[in-house]
Length: 629
Ligand code: ADP
Image (cartoon, rainbow, N blue to C red):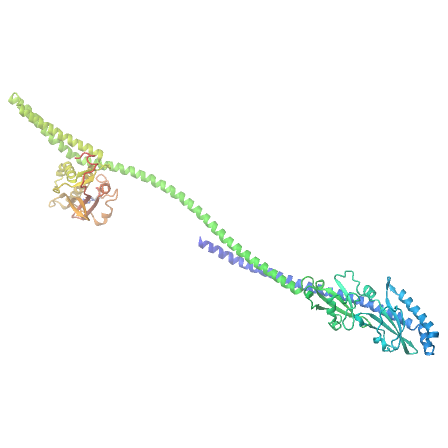
């Protein structure tokens, strides 16, 4: 399973490796392109936004410049008007103020007041105050009431040259910002005085500076030479602007935007773009305030670049994770498939095993049946072997019975009236002989019934040997062999089924007989067949053992077949002579009663089988359950 999994994985990683690499390259290239395009479009957007703002600023500067030049022309026409000039002519002619000049000044004042009232833009007054001053700066006419603050003219005292353009300056007295326009009154090339107008800052701001349709986004301001924001209302209230005045705003390069970072606390929240456009002919600056995000958007190109790069990284990581996850899934799937296949294999093997087991059980049952049949035939063979002995055994008492009966008849014929004592003796003998026959027949019946059964009894091994020998002795004699019996002088009690042990003795004696017969065929006349049966006891490891030895000087067993002779159906004999079951039955009977069976054999010299049983010293309840002999 491991091998197939490895092969699959190797296969997977070999082919898809190229696919994954290509996928990475494609995604990487796509993301790089995306970043580049994003960066480029952001930069282009910035440029166009800046351009738009700058154009807007220029438009305002142009209209403001136009406004100033209009004012300049307006004031110039008043300053060079007949009424103003006639005042200065009369004055130069020596006319006193009380006489002619007062009228002139009155007329000029009327003109100035009218101008003050008439000059407006959409209802908003352009001028706040108009003054006519002499060359020393002393006001000749002032449209303001006396309660209004005095105007500080130090800055206009210096008489301007006739070619000098109108100037704009700020009166910083009382910290008030004012937009002032000064026009010289020139008579025959000589400056006689100046016409000073104080412009309405609100009107200027409202109509020319700060008229953005969306003031929250863009805001415009007028800035003076010294960098002060011109706001009549809130210049003092807005700290940002106040801070900004300290900056040399006019040093900002024209046509260029700069980023102003306010030093105040709110600086981080409010960064603004600032640029300047110098108003034509007027020393004023126009500033535009634009929120940074309107130009760069919420992200700067670099931020968006970084953001996209981060996104790309995340996507790549995601893909890596996905591939890893898929690989793990594949491994699990393969393992699952493999275990399923194994399960199927196991199930079919199981089925096969079941089939084999049932077949084997069938064969075993058949074998068992065959074995029991063989055992029965083996036992019948033993009975057959016994038959001659039985016949002999029965023959003897029968001969005795017949003899006694004939003797009785003869006695009756010859001797007349019977001697009661003689008849009694004869009948007694007949009864004894008949008893003996009954006993033999009973034994045979019991053997047939009990041999092979598990019932056990405490019996003397010598008795079993004697009974067995009685039955085979006659038959063995017909084979012309010498059978020797050496029994232990004491009783050898064992706990066995005596008929089964008798069967063992029959089998071993039969094998011994076959072995000596076989050798006799080969050895010839000089050979004297000998079979001995001995019993005895010995002590081994504090356990008294009873033994029985059946020894012959027959053909012996070749060493090579010794390990097999106890196997069922192992035989070296012809089929009509041997079944191969004798020794296997002997072994199972002996072991059933806690005994052992061993052998010593030499090929060509003979064999000895030795059986050991544990001694049974004390009588048990099972005694006499099987009557023997
Ligand atoms: P069977 O006698 O029917 O062949 P056994 O199980 O009794 O079956 O014996 C198995 C084999 O062991 C015999 O065929 C024989 O070759 C060998 N054998 C048994 N007893 C002797 C013996 N006393 N001498 C020589 N060979 C023997």
